[in-house]
Image: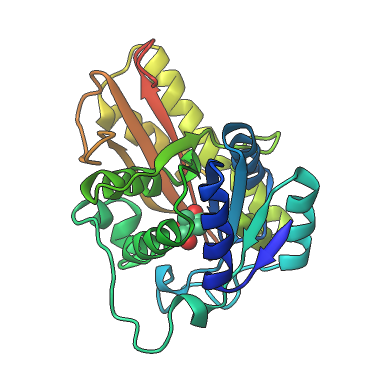
Length: 286
Ligand code: PAF
């Protein structure tokens, strides 16, 4: 496995591979890899001839009060794990390599970027879209792999691909959870044992939404209120948002007719966690 830190280096390798007719799969990450990332890597290894994983904690997607400095990093553990799995290339640039002095160009997917997480993280999706487009331009992947855990991110990236006529195709893979239901996230490492226990309330409230839906409830106000009541029983939890939205434009809906995204962000202490589930009439999940 080759680890590249320079854009010219990875570009040269990829263009050689492309000339030889190899298909390229790409998994963008911010490192500190967990099973959720590794499920994307496995899918890429099965889908394309070559797999590139990027490891880059992207400063432009963090707000000034957010955890950019503290975000967990362990490049040598990550690269060892990826090498074991049979990944071909890791691209791990420095912030200066991706954003040299004088950098001025940003990509925005308007409206979608301001909903759900965008409300409490202004500028976040602008940072995500900018780095993802830069990485797509550098790596030119045939396929790129994203996790459903970041549902809004996946929807926004798909919109960017469509609007900007990019060639890359996207696969969005299911959320990977610990045995007790907590969605895997690099930020789970911030949780104390007591907070980790409290964090289970996210999944429990989503399961409650699923149960109500299966019992025939279609009014989103009823489902949302039940979720909010459940979360408020947990003293360490503070709700950022609980929303039930239409899957394409992320608009709130009052009645679920076909399928809907139930998404939430909850603070457990100072740690902001997100999770979601798709509610769909039978046969409508895809
Ligand atoms: O999902 C993430 O880890 C990041 O938002 C991404 C897509 C790697 C861009 O920095």
